[in-house]
Image (cartoon, protein in one colour):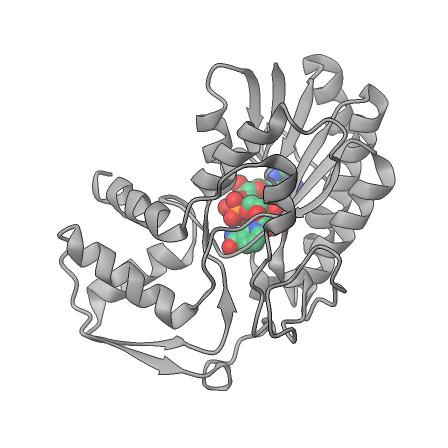
Length: 288
Ligand SMILES: NC(=O)c1ccc[n+]([C@@H]2O[C@H](COP(=O)([O-])OP(=O)(O)OC[C@H]3O[C@@H](n4cnc5c(N)ncnc54)[C@H](OP(=O)(O)O)[C@@H]3O)[C@@H](O)[C@H]2O)c1
């Protein structure tokens, strides 16, 4: 199968490339294919003639997006729209990824696909616009809304915590925002697993690893696993703080846990727990 992977150097992109070994891949990032450039996208499709497209390209700097609105919408809305239009022309599927930050976080239980989207910030707004564009321009699409993505490369909470935990004895981490950490590797593994089952099941699905935690509990789990694997850390105490004590340019949802029952009942795929993935990612980072 010929698979075009856009955003191939990001956290998810790299894992898609790794999981896709054995397929005929064209893995491109910003410098080889800027998805906001329709002409470039069209030329790439004409030359490679993919059977399926996976879009891991995104503008993911949640706080920076608040003051970089045009760029966030260009990458998160116009880019997916371009890919969707070209997929429609070739009648091929587009696999796209979205975010838990399309929700405002006011729900007390986990969000279902049918829940109202109401993003709190520019990043979430731009990702919602991307979902709408994909659904408007092509019919064969899977949009996986995921959350709190981590991996051994790129920028993510796990890497930040391990860096800070190596430098300081005490850290303060927000304890009143809840979500589901999800490893890029598990996302990529599952993406390839469902590929052959996707026909006729097009739509939006929630795809995140169980169970929901706060950033504070996630930080403690990271340090506990790192110590277990022999990391030398300075951190002794992880203090719980509230969102109000850690102001950021972008507002974030208090609860963005995603309910993944629909995904599991349609595709019959088991989603591993994030703690298993965390152990693997920390091991991978340790081994360089
Ligand atoms: N990270 C999270 O916590 C999180 C949470 C929920 C959902 N998601 C979603 O999951 C998906 C994967 O996220 P991720 O964490 O893997 O993102 P990431 O690590 O930030 O990777 C995104 C990649 O897209 C590239 N890119 C940016 N603009 C581009 C353009 N115009 N054309 C082509 N490539 C471009 C980036 O290149 P540069 O680095 O050069 O800009 C980067 O390599 C995204 O859809 C994201 O919205 C992520």
